[in-house]
Length: 520
Image 1 (cartoon, rainbow, N blue to C red):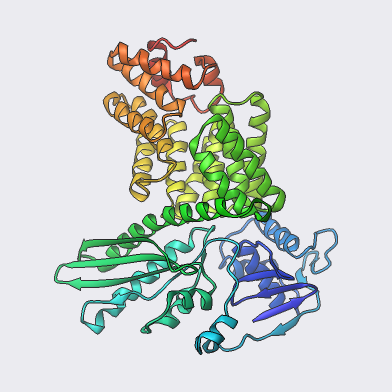
Image 2: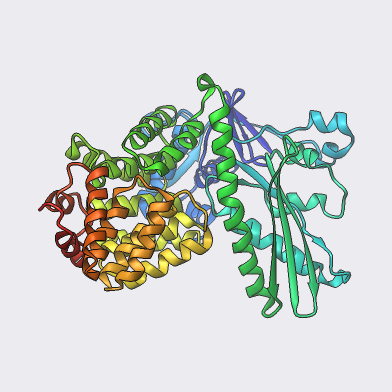
């Protein structure tokens, strides 16, 4: 169904809000809230109505509800002061008061009635990565085993949908292609997605083998393919395990593909999401110049879309790194900007796992309210247990809060989810710091050496090596690592390092830095 009002078009089938020919970026909950108000426009909708419809009856704070309403108003050019389209009736509720015209979509079958019709029915791609998971082929030779293949797709689709930077087609739409020999490009045009995941399931006595391949539906190019084989024990636990394996393999690959696409686009045509994608590799590089460029790009993203929570979260992390890595020429300014941006991100969307992850780590370094930061990190993992970023953040938060055993468990989980992630060196550094606090110095050295191999420019890796070697009594290696600290962080002193934040519980790390001869 499409709803037209003023110069806006809200399309519930495509989950798109357009103004003229341009897609208006809209968070899923905000889109649902707007759609619900429009459908119920003949009556006043109470707060309880909204909570039941949008949050499935969960307890929601007035602040969260007001934030979503403000975002919905902002998306359609309205405001709480003007209330041109969404009106608040004090002590009663809310009502959409704009003039609306409805239009049914043509039947979906017209999208498959030949190449000419298919091209006419092609859906515009969303302004973020879009993916459909097709029904997996049952290769078992037993038609009754199709339920297992279908369950596998359901699990993978659900896991992917937890990444809010992804636009994921619902299973029911993807399954319209079930049992048909299809052209992947046709699938992409019909469903309006750039990427398609297809695969097969083969069950044999005691074993199950899942194959999957990710295809660019615009070009037809294969981006990723892999095979997963497991012992066939508990079917449902197995589905969960394989789904996590598939998702954790394709998620970083898909993001890398999107970053490569963004860097090939002409600068004058960049969107907020393009700026965000371009910032990510600079952020991962962790150099002084890289962080400065990432800050510039995330600020450009926010200028184009002030409601882009992920960009605000990444900006917060970059300003925080300027402080913690000693890059900042004005640490107090960067500290204020880090706090301002993580609070902005939470105000925009406090239910996004990646946003919560950024906010939790930045707050842990810049604020030090451990109870609040642990709550945010725990919620990020609960919202998306498939996210490397969430588990990585949780590890850092627990490390800073003085719980090294829990930190290590989180970092280990992050490693399993994304063993080749561009941010892996940061997890390894956190792991090394936690191991030092537990007195496991040999293991800390191994973790820190891996971090150096991943990213030789990160001073924190050398700090861990210097401290761990000093505790082990390996003076020559400790002094060599200390020289690496000064090379990558020329103004380093132990007192300024402590003042950067996050080291209140790092007693053994600091003691080791002193033993390594680093300046007080």
